[in-house]
Picture 1 (cartoon, rainbow, N blue to C red):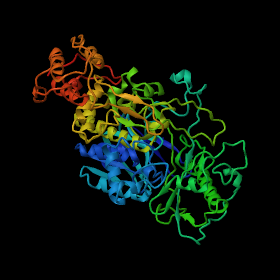
Picture 2: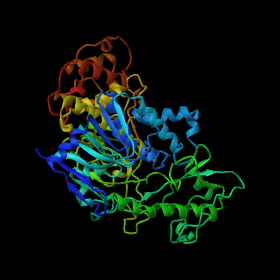
Picture 3: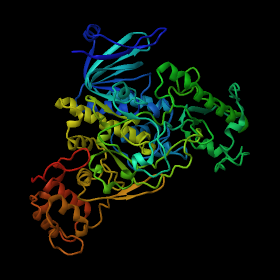
Picture 4: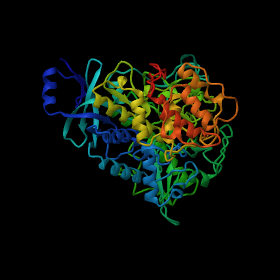
Amino acid sequence: MRLRLTFLIFGILGLFSMISTEKAARFTKNGIETDVLVVGGGAGGVAAAIQSARMGAKTILVVDGPWLGGMLSAAGVSATDGNHELHSGIWQEFVQALIKHYGGEKKLATGWVSNTQFEPHVADSIFKRMVTAEKKLKIIFNARFIGVISQENRVMGAYFDDVLGNGLTEIFAHQTIDATELGDVLADARAGFDLGMESGSQTGERVGVTATNDIIQDLTYVAILKDYGKGRDCTITKPAGYDPREFDGACSNYYYDTLRRKPTVDAQKMMNYGKLPGGKYLINWPIYGNDTYLNVVNMRRQKRDSALEAAKQTTLRFIYFIQTQLDFPQLGLADDEFPTADRLALIPYHREGRRVKGLVRFNMNQLASPFQYNLYRTGISVGDYPIDHHHKKNPAAPQHLEFYPVPSYNIPLGTLIPKGVVGLIVAEKGISVTNVVNGTTRLQPVVMLTGQAAGALAALASRKRLSAVKVPIREVQAQLLRSGAYLMPYNDVKPSHSRFISIQKIGATGLMRGVPTPHGWANQTWFYPDSAVYMKDLAPLAEFYGKSLPALGKDALSYDEARTVLRHFGGRSTESTRATRSGWISRAEFATWLDESLDPFSRDVNHNGDFTEPPRRK
C-alpha cells in the first residue's frame, strides 16, 4: 500500500515532496490515532470538536495559533451578525456564557451593528473553558497543517508542523473535518472546489454576474481600539503612504469626493458601529474603511503571510485617520486584547475562501424559495442574515450585485460532504454553496452551527465505521435536535418550547410548513404554533402517504377531526391523541400528534431531500 503524504520541506527551496512508503512507516510508528480530527480552531472547528466529543468520539482539535474561536476571537470580529432570534445549539451556549460574563443580555448590545458584542479575548476564554470540559477532546495549539494523509481518494488524517519547533505531528483519523479559514485541507485532499464568482448561467442565479471570475470578497485585518481617557494622546506613528483621501466618505465628517457614495453616519456614529464592552471599539468598517482586496487563498504560507501585510497597513492608516483627521487621539490600540507585537488581530478576517464541490450545491434560488425544493428536509443549521458581500475595494468586482430579499433558511447536510473524497467533512466557509450564498452562510453563528453539524456527522460516521455519505441524514438531525439545535429556522418556536422537537421533525418532513418572510437584517420563518389547523394546510400529508385527505370541511380542525385524520393515514393511538378536549387543535399540538402517532420523520431522505422509501407505520 502506498500512502500519499505531502509535506513542506523547510529550507531554501521550500518545496513540497512525496514521502515514500518506507518513510511513511517511520512516521506512522510515532503517529497519533483518533476517531475524529478537526483541523482549525475557528467558530466552526471548535463547535465541531465539542459536538463530536460529546457524542463519545475520541476527538483531536488542531489549532494554528494560541486562540480558539477564529473570526469571533483571533480575527477580532466580535460583533456577531444574525441569529439573534435563532439562538440554539452551541451558538446559544456561547451567547449564554457571554451574558453570564458581562452580567446580562443588554450588556452585549453596546454598538448598533449587532445585538451581541464582546471583547475578543473573552470569546477565546469561553471557548477554552468549553473544550476543557470535554473529556474526549484533546487540543493541540500552535500546529500548522502541512498535508493530508491519504490513500487514493480516502483521507486518513493529516500531519502538522509545530510552530515552536517540536517537529512534525502525524494524526490518523476515521473522519477529518476541514475547519480551516480558507479550505486548505480540502484542497490538499484534491477535492474539487470553486474560488470566486460563478456566472448566472452556471448557477441559475440572476444577480448581475455575467461571467465566472476569481474575485472574492474583501478581507479585513481587524483592530480593537481602547479609550484611554480624555487628554491622552495614543496616536500611532504615521504609516507610510498615508493620505486621508483614501478614507474620503467613510463618514460625513470627511466627505469631499462626491463621486463616492454619500456617507449616512458621522464620525461618532461610525465609531459606535462596533462599540464593545470595556470602552473598546471594533475597527471593521466597510466601504471606505479598512477592508482590503487581496486574494491570498491559493498562496503558500510564507507568501500569504507576506501579502497580508498590505491589509495590516490599510488598518493602520485608517486608525491614524481616526486619531488625527477625526480627532480621536485618546483611542489607541488595546493593550489587553491580542498577544501580537503590533496589537492587531492574530489572523485576518477572511470572508471567503475555497468552496468545496459537495454532494449538494446550495444556491440563492433554493435559499429564497425553500419549499419549491426539497433540500430543506436535510437542514442541519440555520441563518437569518441577508446576503452581504464586501467588494468596494476591488474596482474589477461587480459593484451592483442584485440580491433579492431572502427569508431565514437552513443549510443542507450535503453541502458538508465533498464529491469523490472519503473520510473528509467540510465546515467553516468551505461548504458547498455558491459565491452569492456564501454572503450569508459565512456569518459567525451560522458557521458555528454548521460546524456543530459537521461534528455530529463525523462522530456518527466514526461510530458506525461508515463514510459520511452513508450516514442516515435523519440520524444526524436527531442528534442535533437532542443538542437543542434548529433544523428549521422557526422564529416563533424556540428550543425551550415544550413541543420544539416534534415541530422541528414535522417541519423537516414538510407535512406542516412554515411561512418564509424576508425581513431586513433579521429574516424570518414563522410556524404559528398557536394557530388553528385547516384541511387546506394538510395537502403535503396526502402527498406523503399517497392517499387523499378525508372530507372534513373547511373549518378549523377539531380534536375529534384531528384523530380522524390520524386514523385515516394509519396512525396509532397515543396518550396525547386519546386526551378528550373540545374546540380546535393548534398547529403545535397537531404537529406533536403527527410525530407521536405516525412518526413521519423516520422516513429516510437522500441528500437532495427526496424520500427514499415508502412511509413507515408505527
